Image (cartoon, rainbow, N blue to C red; front, side):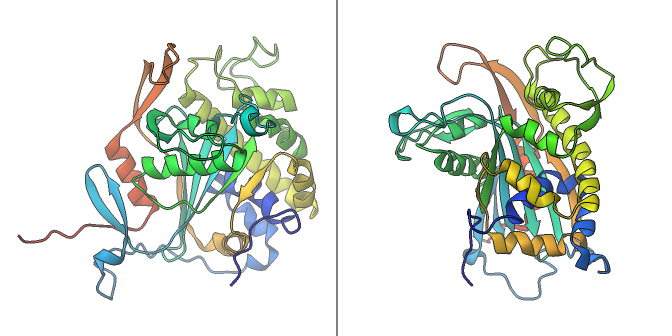
Length: 356
């Protein structure tokens, strides 16, 4: 079958649902049943949760794709589909060409994993400050040099947004032991007001104080965020609370959950909501996602068991790994935590022990 990619001529449904579903599915995925009218009567299927012991046929270890986690070697038992959702900040010069191009940093990264055989899906929100190997690509997308720096910087490198996204996928895959990642959806954080506007504002109880930028945004107050307030709530961290990215990640999860509720209402009220949202986001987003796979999972997702929204444990410190002479936050992910999460999202078998 032809591998159709989301493009200008045929993405009115796929791109829009990518935004709504892939950002929110792990939190309130049941709203898909309202959108996909043909799926409401299907029976719920439990997770098969395959293991090496449950597999009927002998497994050829040498044929499996290898993943290395916490000094342990694993093989990927079967194909899964995973996509990386990227939200970029306002740094860089992404409108530039050639030498003038400078990528933005990836402030938000969410890995969505679908396991068709086990009928499960899950999401992993990644800390932008995570220290890992980054390829230092030039503006032609080439270069062999690497550095152990913050994950968010992977999108800096390369000569265009597509190369920045691909470099970010490479960095995330490396961090997670070499797991395959099939595609990406990238939306600049400056588009958050556009998203917020389409659902008429999102209501949250403010977890931190933003009164320095908006007098109405006082910690503990429940408000329906205006478009500019939504941007500050999701994007800002300096001068807010403890200024940690982990706190901002928590606010992002809170906003996603509330956004999903509003999107569910909009879908029920207006069958043109998807197209309207698409038109609003069209000039902002870029995507490399297999449309056939996307539509397949949208048709069957209510039959899948959710693994939830996961985050990696680790330790935060200040350091100068970026080499600019300044101290920046550095998040050192716990290897055991990475191993545990990847084993939950991906069907892995540990390398068999051999007698020597």
